[in-house]
Amino acid sequence: MDQLQSLYTIIDLGGTFAFAISGAIAAKEKGLDIFGILVVAFTVACGGGIMRDISIGAIPPTGLSDWRYLLTSMVAAVIAMGIHPLMKLLNRPMLLFDALGLSLFAVSGAEKALSFGHNNEVAILLGIITAVGGGVIRDIFLNRIPVIFEKEVYASAALLGAVVVVAGHSWNIPNDTLIPAGFIGCLTIRLLALKYHWKLPGFPNNNSHLKK
Amino acid sequence: MDQLQSLYTIIDLGGTFAFAISGAIAAKEKGLDIFGILVVAFTVACGGGIMRDISIGAIPPTGLSDWRYLLTSMVAAVIAMGIHPLMKLLNRPMLLFDALGLSLFAVSGAEKALSFGHNNEVAILLGIITAVGGGVIRDIFLNRIPVIFEKEVYASAALLGAVVVVAGHSWNIPNDTLIPAGFIGCLTIRLLALKYHWKLPGFPNNNSHLKK
Amino acid sequence: MDQLQSLYTIIDLGGTFAFAISGAIAAKEKGLDIFGILVVAFTVACGGGIMRDISIGAIPPTGLSDWRYLLTSMVAAVIAMGIHPLMKLLNRPMLLFDALGLSLFAVSGAEKALSFGHNNEVAILLGIITAVGGGVIRDIFLNRIPVIFEKEVYASAALLGAVVVVAGHSWNIPNDTLIPAGFIGCLTIRLLALKYHWKLPGFPNNNSHLKK
Image (cartoon, rainbow over the protein chains, first blue to last red):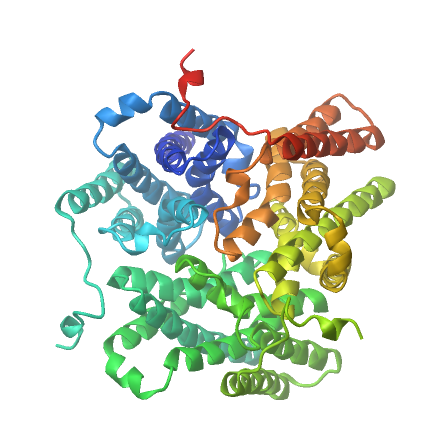
């Protein structure tokens, strides 16, 4: 149990780091001041997890009570601000870190909901909410339609990651196989979607596919 | 009690269905993809109820843990996507379903808060929040000022529905009279407001009415 | 304890009053109707506190269950609507009331989190969230980037107020010294920032200061 807990914490802090970088880059591009960048980075990184914790009754939310989350967000934000030139070497670094955060949180969110004894539906929905919640808040703060509703396969990738974790639990697959599997599944889908611009079909120009 | 519970659930699922249709239509008009439409439909349908459940300590929120809410939202969204031409026969169907959802949730929100033992103020406020919360989230997602703040008598209709339920409880009026009364009261006001473009007075052009 | 409680309540109601006025003025300027103005005033005034109460497990949130908060918001909103000409005598009254609300809530938010037995980090973060939460919701409702991310030293002032309360508690400084100290510290910083247009450094034009 202790080992599971520490594995879970490492994944969760990894997602926090990745999303904080993505949040700081977005806030910096909008011209916010240093404090604003730190606040947005923290909110993006911890917002999804705080929604999850409030929904499962984990009070106070870990994002508020565990200093490691705050510290990780701040360090990530400072790195994102400080080594901007270095970041530019990466092509679209925000998208990469965003995909990492998405995959880590989809897995850790589902895992945490299960470990609190909630049912499979709660675990899957909270996996998705943990994964996309921070990004939705970021876009609301920056006054635009949350990109997850419009862009390449995104929340669907988180859905896959969460489903892998939940299904694996039902089949008693051990966590050290399950968690990497969910993470890799989600990340692969998301990166492929980015590379090949996969999109789910939309409306209203082509709703013929629903009328078979 | 069981009967009350099932009456309450039916009303709540009805509101979920109505709001999911309204959310799906709005999301479709914005050109979101299928997954985005499903997510917006679910969020509009269950967002207000999740806020209510978190506020009264009903953890995890029913919208996340009871598969019927998810299923109802998904079915409603698929119907809204699939039978679009049929929907067009209805004049402004989103407004009609929105009014139904508003009235059902105002009543069920107040009812649930009371059944958790909270006071009248909590019940009235949560009736309103359950009823308008989903629509506010929808508008924030779609990046516009929530229409409830600007349009024809809307939250005031929800206030009426919630007050009827709370007042009736104090006077020991049985639920099978009370709940239809609150529902019909709210719906009537809302539909009349739509038909006759009732508006509450605004500012700053006409604040003379406050200075009598 | 009773005395502490009532001191805390008075501060909190003061913040509610100040923020409700600021919310009502902003909503009025956007042309919302009377009900919309009341709803925005209540949400701005009680939104931050409701987030805090949900995060610390104070269910139902005081803003929903204690009629004094609702009444205070409504009275403040009516005053803001009714005596508009009087308000104009004050130069930029929204900013003044906003600064008062900020300072009162930073102190009361931190204080309440501590009184519920949470750790220092939770108290500081919730002091900030209580103080800025209402304003962030106001700006999201009015469809603009929350001003706290862009304007003169704002959340940093709340940070100072919350830190004073938390540090003072660790050093066993009595509340009747501590709370005014936190309040005056936060308010002074905020008013000076407004007067002299203090800004935290931003990006990307001047990130040289990070490369020392």
